[in-house]
Image (tube, rainbow, N blue to C red):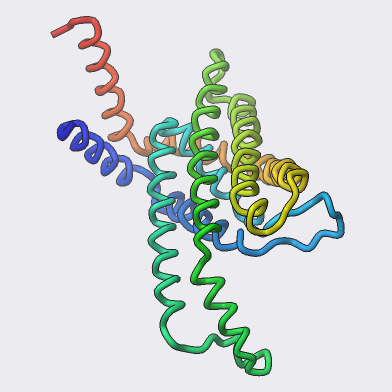
Amino acid sequence: MKQQLKNFLQETKLLLSSVPPFTFALFLLSVFAMNLLANKSLDIPLEWLALDCGITVSWASFLCMDVLTKHFGPKAATTLSVIAALVNLFLCLLLFLSSLIPGTWGAFYDFGEEPVINDALDSTFGGTWYVLLGSSVAFLASAAINNFSNWGIGKIFKKHPDGFLAYACRSYVSTAVGQFADNLIFAFIVSFFFFGWSPLQCVTCALTGMVAELLCEAAFSPLGYRICRRWKRDGVGEQYLDFLSKKEQLYENSDHGVE
């Protein structure tokens, strides 16, 4: 067990050093931003429809996961998703501690020095435990669903696995499934119990959010495809990919009794 943990930490360290910094930074920021923006619901003049502002940035995290899954594999993308969730929890802890520090927000002066403004901002940035719980559970579940469904769909394309058609199909389907799961889990954990949403609103939120994110994925999929091609051409993460290849070869040899 100790050796397995050591190997996992070594593999994770190698993965983190192999992922392009900008991509990982965008991934971390999008995860943090969508969880923070999930605190705000959108005013829509339809009783059966409800959405939160997290959908404005969640597409970026799914785009990053699709690119990471295509190049590094589903296990690597899911490991990075767990790390992103932990970083998000750490940042939320910092915001919570900051909300406890006596002080005044700039908006306090903009709105007639109403104390409720200051208290509301402290409450929003300090976070609410059920919103953080719901967003964390929903993100981790949807990340695993997205990454492994993306990988599984990619296995269907035997002739041109690196073509745009293969990338688009695996990205669109996995994003649709992953986003629906993300929206539905969050809606039932948070919105249903604490915001008073109806089951119909939870389902329609999941569906409409899925459609909105899918449209964003379709718009940015050519960019994601070009990134994947560039990474492969430039040999991005070769050390990590070689490590995985040797690990798989070692496993196959041991499985067949090869010394």
